[in-house]
Image (cartoon, rainbow, N blue to C red):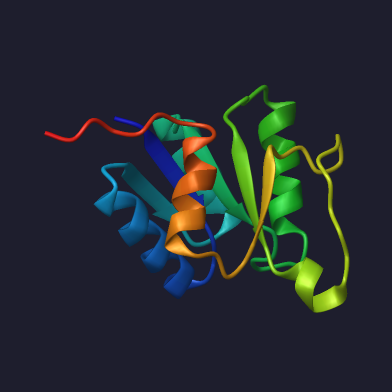
Length: 126
C-alpha cells in the first residue's frame, strides 16, 4: 500500500486531503509544520510527499523541499500553493524549487487523486 505524507499547517487541508486519499485506499500520515514534516518523512519513508509552500514562514515549503533533496531524499513531491493565484506568480520545477509537481489550492478530490496517481500506484481494493 502506498504511503503519502501530507505536510500543511491548515488543518482543513490536512483533513480533507487525508480523507480523500484514505477513501481511495492510500495510507496517509500528516504533519502541520516543517519540523514534524521532516521527522515523519525521515521516519516513515513515504512513497509521496504533498507539501504546502507557506506554513510558519512564507517559504517553509521551498526550504523543506530543498532540505529533502540535499539529503538525497528522492521521494516525489507535490507542492500545494495558492501563491500563484494570490500574487500572480508562476513557479516551475528547478533546483531552487525541487518538486515534481505544483498544485493550486483549492484542488478538487478528483484532481488530487489524479495528481497522486502520476507518482504512486492505485491501491488494490479487496
